[in-house]
Image (tube, rainbow, N blue to C red; front, side, top):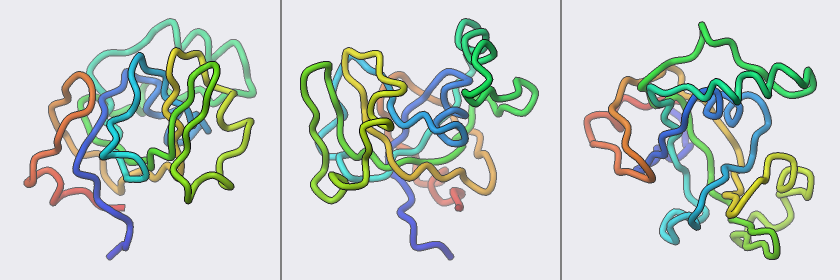
Length: 152
């Protein structure tokens, strides 16, 4: 049994962004709002939604140094892993949870940031199995019977 926290909340992302977070070093999630204060420093599950961002797949294929996930291997409508929300940034400021201040490098903060607000992510870990679950816009609570299935 793992000592890693099983998250209570999830964020649905379009493919390929969920895979880029878990496997490709994408440690910023761009949003128009700050992460909820109660999630700062805690694990957030990553849910791959039913929608794909076709422009993102083309963008990722143009730069071989960037991870480009296979469409055939992605899981739709599933909780696929989790990350810790270490803080957030805007073009002019940066707020980090104190215990992560030394762990988050400038390159991690800037590579994927396009704003207006970038959630700083840390320690992406995939689940052993992708767990089917309905997603919702924004941050949403994971039902207890679904949380009971999540394993690292």
